[in-house]
Length: 193
Image (tube, rainbow, N blue to C red; front, side, top):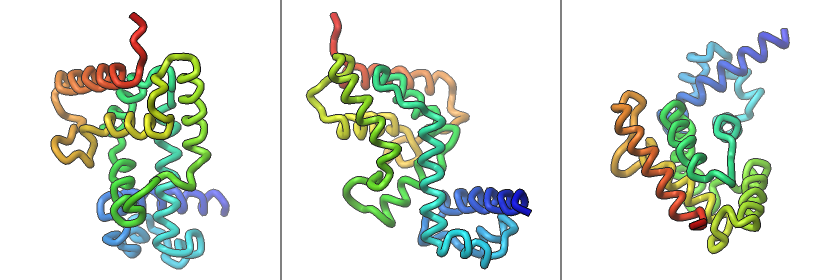
């Protein structure tokens, strides 16, 4: 019985991820989510309490997934930016959910407040990389991390100019990866020459 409940919960989170990424919190419909997941709405409410609770669970799961999919490397910020670019191509849901969360929930301030378990190790790694002279120390770790993510998202689904797609010409992807790598290196890696 437990295994069936776990499978239902996974289907529900998958359906909710797609629904929220496509329609946002306000536009998402619980009936569509439950129907797609083949889960009773009452069971969904028992697990998550509300549509907001379900969104919170989806958002937290996606944040944890992206952390696991793209390991943070403070001593290779250019490589990290490129890995983020690639992850946005293969899993655009996270960046869409981030956009909806920003628009509908946290219009200003720290979007990751309350997710210290995810951000604290990155801040500590950046502080150590700064102490070791591997990363510039003229920018605080929190701002540096935000800037690298911002640069990596230049062609993400939230871009105001050009959004990259997985089926773009491989030459275009190579050019963007090179631009990301060089830009982040020039901005945040001390010149060793």
